[in-house]
Amino acid sequence: MTGLPWDASYHDGPAPWDIGGPQPAVIRVAAEGGFTGPVLDAGCGSGENALHIAEQGLLVVGCDVAETALTRARAKAAERGLDVEFAVADALRLDSLGRRFATVLDCGLFHTFDRDERPGYVASLASVTEPGARLYLLCFSDEGPDTGPHPVSQDELRAAFTPSTGWDIVALEADRVHTRFHGERGAPAWFVTVDRSAKRA
Ligand SMILES: C[S@@+](CC[C@H](N)C(=O)[O-])C[C@H]1O[C@@H](n2cnc3c(N)ncnc32)[C@H](O)[C@@H]1O
Image (cartoon, rainbow, N blue to C red; front, side, top):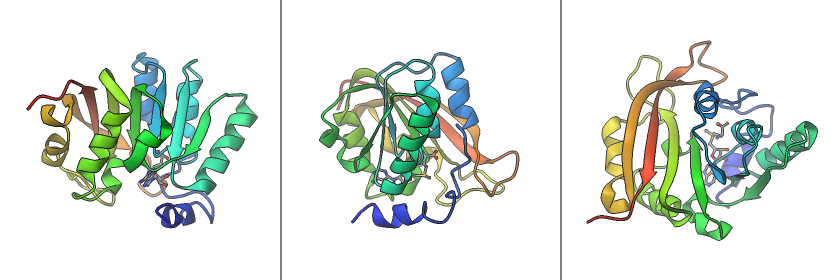
């Protein structure tokens, strides 16, 4: 049932966040060689970010709870001749994938979880990574103007990713996230680089 409301977002044309191409932040990291395979795109939507990373020659898995989005992502992969696996999976139970990833991308997923869900999500990310893996997270920022829905503060990000949960924040920078309703500059965002560490009390 978890995926049904999300699936509906993809029924009548592109979802508000579905900009028809990769996010500029993802293009930048890919150009810098920041992704190492295998890569997981958690909450991949219709797959533009995952497909862009796959174009760099990396093994990529995208997962989402919205079947309609995944069907669209698979069609795009076929059209572009890219071999990307798009799987139905709940990001709160990523262990169901039975895999480990060197890099995880979260583009617009973290900010959809409420405070009670975040610890479970962070633990789920840990379950598919080993120390040394890297997470890139792009989310709406609470530093306006013109913030997106469910904006997140720096403090909330620093509370979620801690050495005791097995994560070290390497960089937390102001960025932009593009949507279909925020105009050319997009909305204020945080771009967070987080390294998976051994859990430290
Ligand atoms: C804001 S959209 C971002 C989609 C995509 N990353 C992008 O940049 O276009 C959030 C995505 O997370 C998915 N999602 C929400 N909750 C999820 C969950 N528990 N597990 C997996 N995917 C989830 C939604 O279906 C939606 O596709």
